[in-house]
Length: 289
Image 1: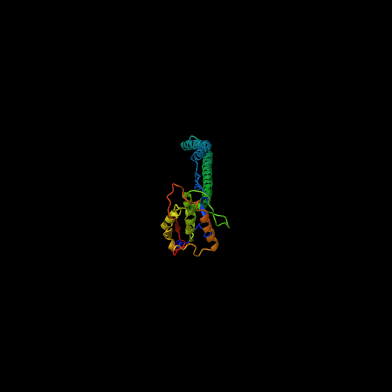
Image 2: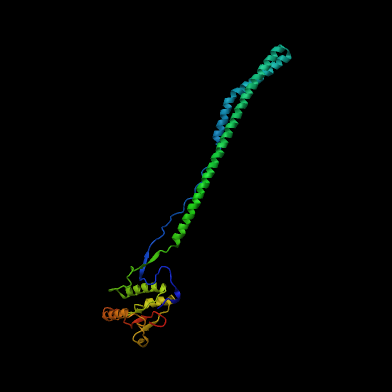
């Protein structure tokens, strides 16, 4: 049997004996994706603080407002007394001037208190705006870091999802032969199919001389046919006239194969439960083997 048009596939090396597969994770699981940073509560003007500032301003300026109201009332009375002639003009004028000055002084203090409240509120608003800008800059930096981490995680997740989970197990270097002692027909068939299928997948050729009497290569022949690599099969003794086993095979391996086939004939004879059948042989090349 020959792979011919199948070409070499990744994972198999021509010239190496593949005995099976092993499970291995080359790329570890990256785990859950990184969590997106949660924006903090934005800084804002505290309504409680604002109410407290206004209440304090009213408490501090209430005496000045009361004094200004008393002065205005007294000024009104003085002007009324002066206009009616109950007090002298000079006394009324002096009293009105003093009361007007006191009322103006009280009003000025009330105005200064309100201006100070506005300045305090404006300062707090500027502080809040600066804090909010700092929050936004920190959030922007954290979002940038999260985007970078997420891209890295996504690449690792894709590599983890695409990676191969099973890798071929091969013989060590400088070892190209496997001797199997004992076993069952099913075990021989599985081992032959595993080794030969890997070689066919790598674009190589396989020659199988089945002397088991139980058609141990039947599964391999069926698999090769399913893969589009039709095997050449000879059943002995009927196909003996066109049998060309050994053509192109080196003398040493051919002699060893013939000797082992002769000396192990008794050991390979099937148990009583097996149905004896002629030996099934598969050719390496389309022209024969």
